[in-house]
Structure formats: structure tokens, C-alpha cells
Length: 380
Ligand SMILES: Nc1nc2c(ncn2[C@@H]2O[C@H](COP(=O)(O)OP(=O)(O)O)[C@@H](O)[C@H]2O)c(=O)[nH]1
Ligand SMILES: [Mg+2]
Image (cartoon, rainbow, N blue to C red; front, side, top):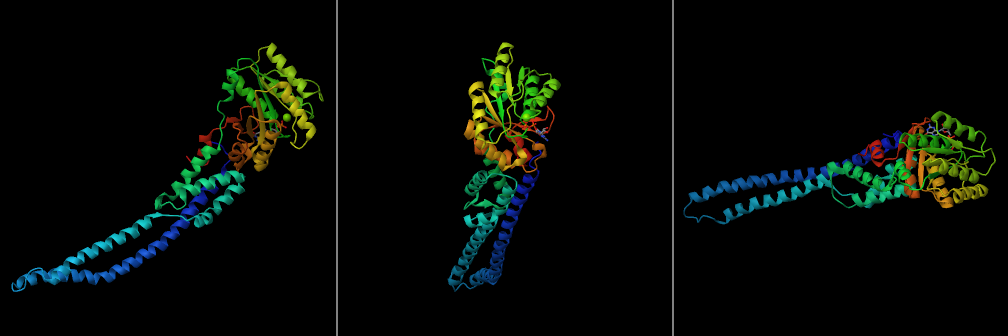
């Protein structure tokens, strides 16, 4: 289970319950019309009495042999049960109306306002909301839905849409690294300051090491004070080698060094750190382009903070436009209570989320998994 959907989960549940409740109120209106029919039936009652009178009359008729059996009164009596049958059919139709309901487009818009607001408040991107809404519309508008099945229909629709929206990697990292013939497999991590690049590198290196692969750390953030020391500390703690140079050296050159060393000493995978930068800074973008040109990464991972919501999504899109990214690491989900970024980021960028960061320790990393997300949203 992921913790980041605390509010979103509640919001979806509440909104869907409220939709059902509103439709139930509509049901009362229909029930009222059912009442009217019942009252009408009461009017019919004397007619029913007539029927029995009429049937009773038949033997009377039989008692009078001078009159032929099957006189006009008997024929009339035959008609009554038929009339009663018709009434029943009509009543049946009303009952069916009560059991299933259809929602007009207008009603749909009104009903889904709350859900829409809830999704927005919890950082779900507009495009994702549009997709969820369009799918729901297709499944709900002008289609008879069984009364007891409204909630289920909505949940099923949301579930199906989310399965399309969320993007898991086709192959996990261990497989990707293991399958590359010519080692090392090179991963470069990008993202703005403080998003969790260095920590994520440590977590992934630790994970790959536990899978019997040989990782090498490359201190490519030569810009920010203490960045090299930070990676060095992880290197010491996890007992994973590091390649570094002095501050202000060219990160592309550090990357090149790292790859050479990895080739010479049979490392399976190079994990390269970079300086945090904003996508709007042209100099730093040129630097990133140079890193990519020189190191030719097998995988460019963008590290985004879950808690920043739509900002994380926009950053990922901008970085993708500038340098092209292959996947995403979503950090700090443990301190996010909305979770919208996790739902939106892969749909907007069309890039899979590889891992979710769930804390500050090396083991605080979870693979991104659709089923776990659906389960965490109570949609399973
Ligand atoms: N709670 C939490 N903190 C994290 C996570 N990932 C990173 N951090 C913290 O975020 C801060 C910035 O991380 P850092 O790796 O230095 O970011 P960088 O500037 O992108 O390299 C550090 O204090 C990390 O411990 C996470 O998944 N959960
Ligand atoms: Mg760093």
C-alpha cells in the first residue's frame, strides 16, 4: 500500500456516495409516481368488485335456463380480467423504472462537480480529470443502470480508466541492467534541487546491489556545495564505490571518467548524479545536453517530488521537452497526502514511473505498481 492517497481516497469515496445519494433522492420522485399508481389502483378496486359481481352473476345467469348462457354480461365479465392484466403490465413498467435509472448529460455534469473538485484539490491534472470524466460519461450517460449498481458502475469506470492512465515500466530496472550486453548500463538522474536525486541514487544502487549487480556512483553534481560529500557518505554507508572530481569540474567529464572506470573494472551499472537545475536556465540546459551527449545514458530518469503535485508534473514535461526523459522517480510520497502527481505524471509525460520514494533511508524505495495504487485508492 502507498500512503499518499489519504485525501484522494476519501474524496473519491465521499463523492461517489454523494452521487448515489442524489440519485436515490430522484428515486423518491419516481416512488411518488408509484404511489399515484397505487392510488389509481384503489380506484380500480371497485372495478375489481364489479368483476367478482360479474362472475357471481354467471351462475345466476345459469339459473335462468330461458336465457342463453354467455349473454352480454358474461362477455363483459370476460373483458375485466384482461383489463386487470393491462394494469399489471403498466405497473410493472413503473417498477422497472424504479429499479434502473438513466442519467442525462446535464444531470451528469451536476452530479460530477464534487468529484471533479475533489480530484483538482488533490493535485490530479486537468487532462487526467478530463479522461476520467469522458470515460465515466460513456459508461453512465443515457444508459439504464440498475439502482443498486450505481456506485459499482462508477468505481469500475474509474478503475478501468486508471489502469489506462498509470504507466508501469515495461521492464524493471534489474532486468534492463542485466540484459544489456555491453556493460555498464548508464543511468543519469535529473531534476531540480532538493527533489531527491542523490538519495534516490543511493536507494537504487542499494537495491541493485542486493540483486547481485555491481553499481558505481558518479558524483556529477559538481555545482552545489556538499553535493559530492553527500554522495560520498552514501558510498561509505552502502559500501558502493564512487567516482568524483573536485567542485566546478565539468560534469560531463566526470561522467566520462565514471564510465571508463566501470568498463575497466566490470561494473554493471553507473548511476550518475547531476546538479539540480530549473528547466528555464539555458546555461544549465546546455550542460545537461552535454552530459547526455558524452555519457550516452541507457536511461534518463527524472526525479520529481510527489508533494509538489502539478509542479512536479509540469517539470517532468519540460525536462522531457529539453533533454528527453525515459522514466520518472517519484520521491517523498511518504509526506504527500494527496497523491495526484502519482496519478498524473505518467499520463502527461507518457513516461513510466519506475520507483516511488517512501522515506530517507536506502531501503525506502518501492516499485511503481498499478495494482497497489488501485488498492491504495480503495478501487480494487
Ligand atoms: N521523506 C522523504 N524524504 C526524502 C525522500 N527522498 C529524498 N528525501 C529527502 O529530501 C532531501 C533532499 O534530497 P536530496 O537527495 O539531497 O535531493 P537532491 O538535491 O535532488 O539531490 C533530503 O533531506 C532527503 O533525505 C523520500 O522519498 N521521502
Ligand atoms: Mg543532490
